[in-house]
Length: 298
Ligand SMILES: [Fe+2]
Image: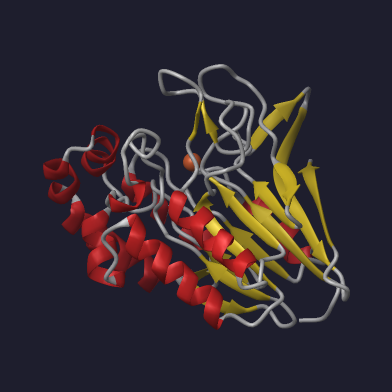
């Protein structure tokens, strides 16, 4: 791919991606598409509904699975309530669904703890299926916490804790050729605790920075070795927020890194008589300057 490089970021879909999107992106001048995951609704099998559409995309497309993709309701409840029995109980069906999902997908490249080459730009995909952990802000050592959907991540990636995940992400940063960007489902810790902050939560007793510690530690490491990413792209924390219907900061620059939360939801909505579809554009020029813009296509 050439520079400037133009990327489209599609946030959490939860079923909201259709033939109009396919037509638009295929006719667009984007070089590639990045999808932050959460294709499915609460029904785990709904992830398969979008496969025929995604397979019609003609642009290189990179997809990191979200916490709703192929995961069952028992697992999700287990993750939220920290019930290990429920987490383990639903795990075999996640493996079966992921095998089917990977087999059916032809165009999008499934990502997770992986490095991809976008031509003049590299892509590091972070921890798949991440959904945060409400214990992280109160335990002594958040890195000792298990990763979300541990049985699947242990089986496929050999990762069981946030510490191991951080180490894996750091090793990817060691290996990647800069310039590079990071694609995650859930964003990093450290960008604010208010509900209006990028990865702040309003669904806990107090407003809390809900971001992932493994990802923020890996980005800290990247700064330390003087190899920071150009951008960190994620979703998961929807806006407007579920409870307070508050908007969130969806992009900001910190220490020279651009952070993006693409999870504007609903993604497809009515504005008067018009149906509007949300995505985010990201342009990187030959001087590694980076620009982003929210786009509402009708
Ligand atoms: Fe989501």
